[in-house]
Image (cartoon, rainbow, N blue to C red):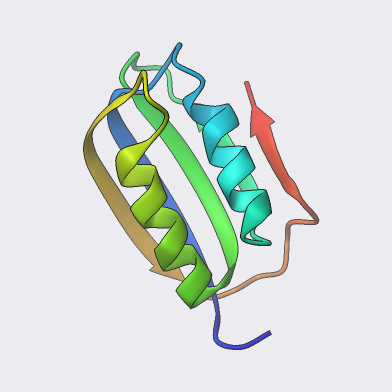
Length: 94
C-alpha cells in the first residue's frame, strides 16, 4: 500500500435519517477503504473512521462534504493518525 493513513472524521449537519452512513459505506468500498460509519448521540453528527491509501482517503473526504442528495453537510472535521490495519472491511454501525 502506497502512503497508508488513518482518519477519524466527524461530519455535522443534516446527516442522520438521510442514508448518509449507507452513502459513506458505498463510497468507501468503491475506493477500497476500510473502517466504519456510525451516528453520534447528538442528532446532527456522524463519525467516520477510515484507513487506506492517503490519496484515496482525501478523495473520500471530498465526497463526504457533498453527501447523498437528502443531506446537508455543515462541517467535516478530520484528525489524521498512523495506519493501524485494524479493519478488514467498511461497515455501518448503529
